[in-house]
Image (cartoon, rainbow, N blue to C red; front, side, top):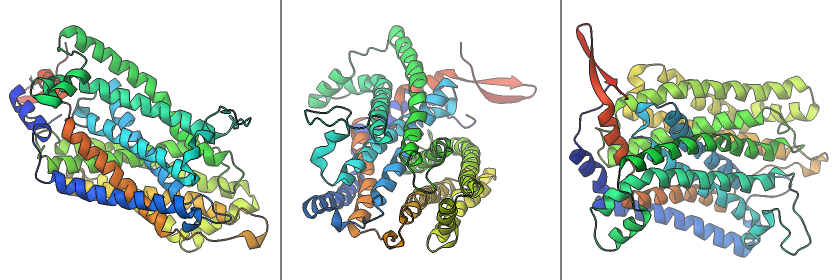
Length: 455
């Protein structure tokens, strides 16, 4: 990176470990706020389980609402960790170092949050085991050809792989914390660091494991959101039954996930005062990446619209007409295109905007607002018009329970990240030290420029 500052090992240890060894003044208020928001969601789930799904806005024929929209949204956010960690690790991109841990942890908590919503949507949470392809002595076998069965398999495989990714990269840092703590924390870090001593053999094995996990988890990364898209595409609901949904959902997930990482990086940089580690260069690189990702997303977004029109089916055209020209879906369509592509990509074309921290924060927020609206825009209109008889046509009005669940999901992810930051550093200490070893300066003509030298 162009702006990497030369730091000693002592400086890196002190700066990156202080949130773990001490408690920032804002940490407890942030935990209390996130807990209150999450408490609202727990209250909503309790009321829904006690009184039934009738307290939500779900009714014939719209039985998938905010909860399924939120499920798709958080699965999309979770793609950031693999995108940043696996691909950039395999490419040996140096600028990944301060970003990987936060992206991986965001993946774990986002995916865990997403997995909760199909269970909550069932209404009867205690029957969650019905989704597994085993009859449990009920003499009823779930349909293993259904993507509703594939979903749990793919999500838990992805969650396992992402958790292993985080744990593998944490080993050297937990060993550092083991040597700097006492009492129960020392015992915890001693157990979890698995006897790490930092010798060359251990680092070599960790490097090999990181490469293997990166390669193995990439197919899972692609398959998870493809399977989520097949929840819709294999149905016969108008405007859902499209072959383009798998790549469309995957690229949309990357768009929202990388934007989520940008948001998180701004918060970490500001809250922990990590200006020496998360620099404008990192935002510049992510901004360039987002231009390509957003353009690919817009291509598939418009392709989905054109497929429905080109097919010429009456129901497909009726749903697309509702999506584009009727209120409020037409307004949502406008917001999705403007907030998801025109404003952010137009701004990211300028280097000064990509390197401006507050601009990047604002643009990443509006991108994810448009991505959430896009999921709503995709799901609801097709359900409202799917029945042949017009008396079954209906509109969807979300209930207060569903709105509380949407906000509480953000509280859950934020609370998970806050608790993680109190026990483990959100920037890999050993990666920063390794990056310092690789950096050098070389002379080209009369100019001295920064370089990375690997031997």
